[in-house]
Image (cartoon, rainbow, N blue to C red; front, side, top):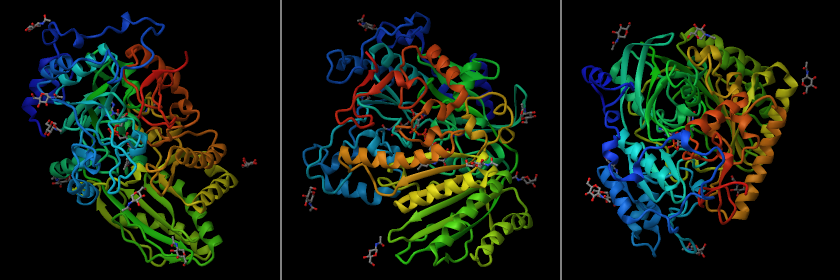
Amino acid sequence: MWITHFLSQLLFALGAEALNFPYESLQLTQQDVGNFSAISFGNPLSVPSVYQGPKCKIQPEDATWPSEKQWAQLNATLDGNLLKPYPLGAACYPDRPEYNMDTCAYLLGPATTTRLFFGDPLTALTTWGEGATCLQLLNTTGRTCVQGGFPVYVVNATSVRDMQAAVNFARNQNLRLVIKNTGHDFIAKSTGRGALSVWTHFLKGIEFLSDYSIGEYRGAAARISAGMEAWEAHNAMVNAGNITVVASLEPTVGNGGGWALGGGHGPLTSLRGLGADQVLSLNIVTADGKFLTADVNQNQDLFFALRGGGGATFGIVTSMIVKAWPRQTRIGGLTFYLTTGTGQMTIPSARGYPSSPPVHIADAETFWKAYRVYLGFAKEIVDAGGFGFGDVNPQGNNTYVFVGTITLPDYASERIRDFYTPLFSSLSEIGVNVPNPRHSFLPYAQAGIGVTPISFPGSSADRLFISRLLPRSLWANGSRLDAVAVVNRQNAEMGYRVTARIYGPSAEAAGYPGNTTSAVNPAMRNMVIHCVTFKQEPVDILPAAEFRAEHAKLRARINELVRLTPDSGSYFNEADILEPEWRTSFWGEHYPRLLKIKKAVDPWALFWAPKTVGSDEWEVVTADGLPTQNGPLCRTGT
Ligand SMILES: Cc1cc2nc3c(=O)[nH]c(=O)nc-3n(C[C@H](O)[C@H](O)[C@H](O)COP(=O)(O)OP(=O)(O)OC[C@H]3O[C@@H](n4cnc5c(N)ncnc54)[C@H](O)[C@@H]3O)c2cc1C
Ligand SMILES: *[C@@H]1O[C@H](CO)[C@@H](O)[C@H](O)[C@H]1NC(C)=O
Ligand SMILES: *[C@@H]1O[C@H](CO)[C@@H](O)[C@H](O)[C@H]1NC(C)=O
Ligand SMILES: *[C@@H]1O[C@H](CO)[C@@H](O)[C@H](O)[C@H]1NC(C)=O
Ligand SMILES: *[C@@H]1O[C@H](CO)[C@@H](O)[C@H](O)[C@H]1NC(C)=O
Ligand SMILES: *[C@@H]1O[C@H](CO)[C@@H](O)[C@H](O)[C@H]1NC(C)=O
Ligand SMILES: *[C@@H]1O[C@H](CO)[C@@H](O)[C@H](O)[C@H]1NC(C)=O
Ligand SMILES: *[C@@H]1O[C@H](CO)[C@@H](O)[C@H](O)[C@H]1NC(C)=O
Ligand SMILES: *[C@@H]1O[C@H](CO)[C@@H](O)[C@H](O)[C@H]1NC(C)=O
């Protein structure tokens, strides 16, 4: 959706908040509240400092659950945008009224490569995190389909007013509230049992501004809506011509939602910083139901917190203004493959770049030496402003495929060749000869990249997945990096896929205002690799005891990396649901300030998701004891 220059000027004239999109001009008024006290506004200053509320947020089976009449009245306030959806998988269960085997087969087949799941109000890509309470399976013998960790009601938000009414209703009724955008979260932070969900997905829009000033910033910028996905930003960049905004590599991640609020990496991160570093201004509905703007001039605490402090914590962000560059970006890159072992091999995609035929290395020790050489080279990729991958795919029978991709934005051809030549020389020195490495160029912005989104179910989003940031200090001491390479080798030998996302959002790359103060994890400022290790087989079908054992096994392996990188942390948006030391791991020295801000803006603890700031005062109590969203949300302690 594009709004004209004229319309945006008009919007600016309307109120004190800086409105970015028409859906922000429709706000909840005292008149709308009228005698419907369930949606009246809150006052954070009137909340007792010692918690006095009920132990748990209410559940549908509780006597205090709102009446049908109240839900209907809420729906009327929302102009009919209240949904009461059932999980799509219900089609696969004979005892459900929605049972339909053709629909079930469609969900498991053709639908997996469409956008059907992204347009569903409930689907969370991490099904185990929801509680696996309605799995899409052809054979559902012995399984049930229940609402479980999915919300009961969903507000299909179309305006700021919808969000304010939902926030007020949930707060006044002691309901659990969740915010869902794309549902990509790896630990199911966008779903919850018995919840009212605010679904931001249909709030679409992007508008480029050729000249925007705020604080010390003057330059190009873009307004982006809460529901905008990366592929939509790409389409808009292509249509607009000479403009670049930073977006995630994954086309369907919500760049106006959890991605930027929790950090947000992408192909331009070593050059331009994280998603959070792009933000110049944000609009937000806070827990009291108010709508406000946070930037360098107003609500500075929130402005600090919303850039890296995480989604689902401080309010519902409705839109933001991000930096842009008034030119196109072109990315040069290449891919190469190394293999070892005699088993069957599947060669992963070259990510759009040219690649030489896979180089087979008969001697496994030499293969792992080559892996170590590549890890050593990773720092050069970051220092050059690039983004890289270095993934070890175990394929059974002691067979491994390594895929390395190096991408460099805004480089001339010769400079790229000069850049990677030393890597291939080092590999030659250990007897690994990659024939004729060659690169090509791709425009950074590409139209239509969202046409084939990640397939679901069964995507990497649904794996048991843990990560660790590898700090620059490892590259100053070869024996420490050796030790990391050994742990990664052992992990691959245990069957885990061991991947490296190579990027470094230094303060220099972040620029103003990201290089002054923001809640971005300090460990990300001097990282070189975001190392993600995951179990290749799905875990959502496992019985609880097996899930627990699988989690403990992987966690123990990642703890080896933690032991070798005590000075680092982990990326909030791609982390373990049971991340130990998570406060310092995600936010380092920023945690105390973030907690203070959280308590000041949301003393009701209305916004809650696992491992968010202040989340440890509440917990989801599950029947099987697993860390899922399938249970009531209750205060911890007595
Ligand atoms: C397949 C896949 C690929 C990924 N690729 C990348 C990548 O390339 N780079 C990267 O950095 N990360 C990546 N991620 C991680 C991604 O950053 C997180 O999943 C992030 O949480 C996605 O945000 P979302 O809004 O799209 O998803 P959601 O799951 O809808 O939301 C995530 C969290 O943010 C909250 N939230 C969403 N919108 C708002 C809002 N408007 N206001 C307040 N809170 C909000 C939600 O409540 C939830 O807690 C990937 C994840 C997946 C599953
Ligand atoms: C609330 O106000 C509406 C009109 O706005 C009226 O129809 C309704 O009866 C009132 N309800 C109560 C409980 O006062
Ligand atoms: C809300 O109202 C709309 C329009 O009247 C209706 O279609 C929808 O089913 C209602 N939602 C619920 C949960 O009843
Ligand atoms: C379906 O699953 C059940 C329980 O796991 C199993 O006993 C049965 O053999 C399966 N049926 C088919 C047709 O695979
Ligand atoms: C949600 O609202 C959008 C319009 O904003 C509409 O296109 C979509 O169909 C609605 N989704 C559902 C499930 O009602
Ligand atoms: C982009 O910028 C270049 C150089 O400034 C210019 O030649 C070109 O016409 C511009 N293209 C568009 C679509 O504006
Ligand atoms: C491993 O090798 C055995 C024997 O050759 C074969 O049957 C099996 O399918 C292989 N496993 C994998 C994962 O390739
Ligand atoms: C490098 O790290 C090893 C292992 O931690 C340590 O024993 C050694 O002292 C370090 N060397 C330097 C020069 O810091
Ligand atoms: C932040 O980056 C800007 C460039 O965007 C630079 O001018 C400024 O000096 C930097 N400030 C700090 C504290 O690094």
